[in-house]
Length: 154
Image (cartoon, rainbow, N blue to C red):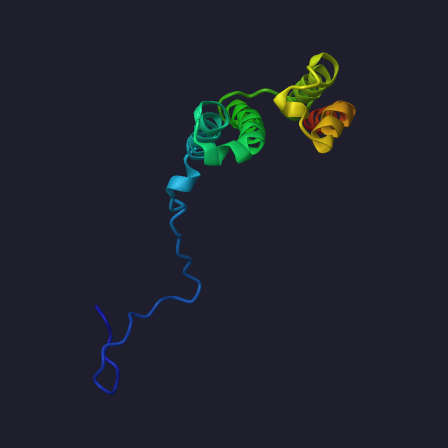
């Protein structure tokens, strides 16, 4: 029961100074904490970019065709990484994905046709030509970092 203050007000019950109170260890979760949130959002953008890049015949959207196709490819790669990261325990994931991306860019540079939609600008030609070696180096660096991290752990 609360003690009465000399003024007649009810005061808080006296607590021992050394009393420790346990706070709730449960964190408040939000929809953003759900492991499906990011993959579902990225999948929605993949569908949007894919529709606008290949199926939409609106003449106003034709000027954004390359943007939508590049966005589609980049988001498909991001979606694959999110799904692999959330639902598997793959080690060397970044190295694997950088290596796959290097192979894709190298294949586009070597096997792609010169008049295809992905070669419509100087920047894209440079990206497919120089992107493969850059991503191959990133794959090697990422694999070395992961190897060092795993060797320290075990």
